Length: 112
Length: 118
Image (tube, helix red, strand yellow):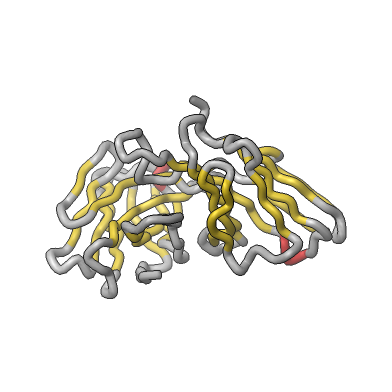
């Protein structure tokens, strides 16, 4: 499975933007970049995903480097409820399980 | 739709006992996954069902673990002769099969079943 590298932890202030980086230098042409987050005492929840182009949804934006070897999850205006572990995952577009392989993620702390 | 439901949310058992967890996926999702998560780690894949067929199992799934999805709807994960190392959060997730259905490309997780083996 392709690997991703994320910082173990990051800290930001409430109502400020947060940029969460992810390196995936071994990404293949058919790998989708997925982001999930896990709030305390809950299961992971989907945030956003993309292949080549930048993506926006109501939760966040995903900026993908031109060579696709890195990406950045952007929370435009962090709230205390955004404190969570954020996982950057590569999902292969193949038949079968298409399971997600989680790393350790980035623990995001939001200061009031 | 209430999402993916897991029961029980917490289970405390003594070493050597058997435990069973149940997962009710989103109704139109025919793909179902079990993961295990220990403290401070990301979730680890255990097994995958497409309808009632168990199509993939991780080497983490020892002989003491068995998962079923008898009618292609709910699933159970049983752990026999529990060991202290089995203490973890057991997460269930589901996904739609058809590309045009909402959630086809993403997993929806339940809140998990936390197991503590004394």
